[in-house]
Image (cartoon, rainbow, N blue to C red):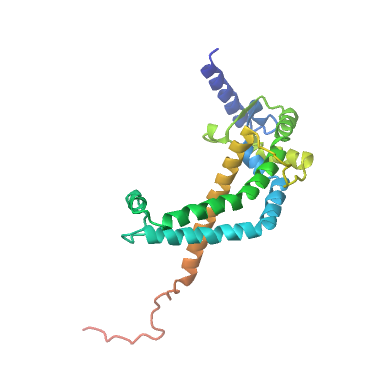
Length: 243
């Protein structure tokens, strides 16, 4: 049997399980799992990121200040003032040896230095949870008698019982209730940690952007004056009958 036909057979088995409505069968041993989300939803992850935010609050504030300063410099380099710094405008600044470019490089370097301890602490916390992930996943696989795990986007539709992400998160909460946020001296993250950390940061960034849009929409809606519905006069003037 080819790999393709095996996949089709597995999906047919899944369809049979859907029809039977058996959550206990975990859809004929097939499940979906979002590894990144399972780690991000753990209590240890939330506590670690909150602690890091508190510890490096001054760093974060300085980073925001320097980013505003960078925006101001970019505005000065934007010669046509269309709020879009193009490559041509940057090339012109380089050609003329504009001193603002040196200020830009300095502030970007300072931001990187301020971010370094934050990134290290976050990556260390993520790796500490990820190190226990395989055991937590295997625990859930054994308990639910799962034979195949697929990414959530592998399904067009599936019942909630198929997703074991929350189950793996619960197992992680038991096995690793808390993690440290101070990496040892000369600590370097694993290659797999770097990829996972980037995925987590991208999801956090996307969530922040969505929230910012919602906040802006809510603020705009609150500023709009309420329009009173038009109403008919309480005592309309009677019209004479036509003859």
